[in-house]
Length: 309
Image (cartoon, rainbow, N blue to C red; front, side, top):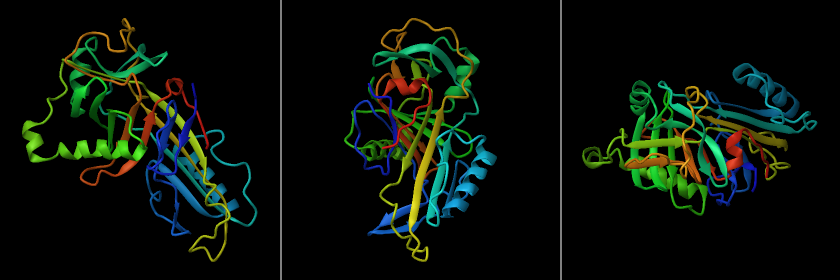
């Protein structure tokens, strides 16, 4: 079983069995028609910081900014030294949605493949106050069965966390497009009147908490000139992403019996006990994709792992 979590360069990346994929649009360079251009996506984002410039200066600036905004720089996020007189392009994204009303949590709660993992969410053993407050943050977009659903968790600020299980698509982008389409269909007037039933006492939500970190060196950009950089070439280009979900749940309650990860009988299960997708979106109607993660390797759910293709 692979323990890798890979930061992929685009949503067109294929989904691979037993491999976690993370996509973030926050890297400040992109290649178009054989040329490399700067893009302003990461500038000013509360969840990311990016620098492009003379490598030593850019490396020093981003290290200080990461420490100021997010705390100590995670080990391996940045190189120890910069490449001489070349340009450096660095980005660090820390996506960590939080919820106004915390969800419950439980240790040793579901089976994910061959592993037993903790969860956060809502189920019958949760007290009435916690359940009613947290359930108000949930919006069901689709429920076709145990392994085919789309549910939205309304986070603080303007973030929305969409969690989905669906038949495995060929690419990460295919999964994201399908889920975002389900979210948008729910906003139509017809679906508002005749859409999915709300999340209620006959529903169970169980999601493994995530703490994932991945680093990607953008090898395809190194050595190429920056289109608006006076002919200077890129000597180093790397992006690090950390993604945490469920970290602000209530302290765990005593675990109950494990029954295929689903436990008591419910009318509708929203249980991530197999490969699932998480998409962090901005406010509607733009539905900006801030991060997408395909979670397939259960070992990674136990803590942070890193991978660099």
